[in-house]
Image 1 (cartoon, rainbow, N blue to C red):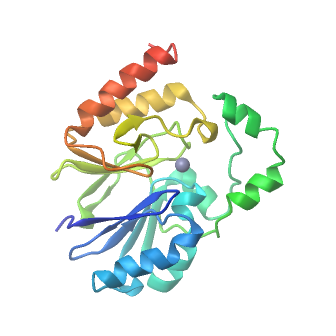
Image 2 (spheres, rainbow, N blue to C red; image 1 turned 135 degrees about the horizontal axis):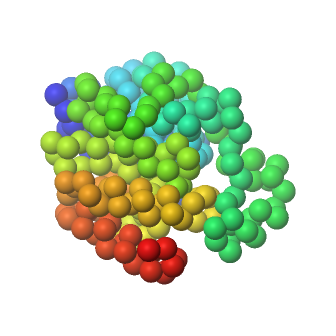
Length: 237
Ligand SMILES: [Zn+2]
């Protein structure tokens, strides 16, 4: 049981992850244009879409759900996402526009919503498992942590045994420097810090982010240091 080798499927925009092993699964599905790259990663490891048993989604943004509907159709995999973001993924709730916690976000709020919607579009997809704090995906040995701040229903998937987690956008790692999520599409600095501190309190060696390279070894410590730096930069103790 548990997780096998983790393959990063990256585009210029985002990462998603293919996890090999007895039960192959994807974490996130990148942008809509990543379909071919995801299929190539599967076939490169002797798999086809039909072998995927789960597709786990860290949050609803289009660069994580871009290929979701199509891959669900092709694979029949069970789709799991945080409860609040699941409502957006299945098309019940609208996406939120830019947040107001950064200058870039405030500027984007002046852009017509229809323009951003077109750019951020993904096809709605049924969610089989709406996840909450404390849930587990037992077959995969994963615990679910609700980590709001970037989106309201963002989650991380934590594999305690291997001290690794898929953390979505909560912490980026461009040029091997842990940093905050894109603030223009985040909503709450206090919640971001709190969620980072939760990750920092885990026994966590490696964190797999939506943007940038893998964080670790020593991921928890690096994330704690980032949270401390941001708390003083943002004036939030
Ligand atoms: Zn995001």
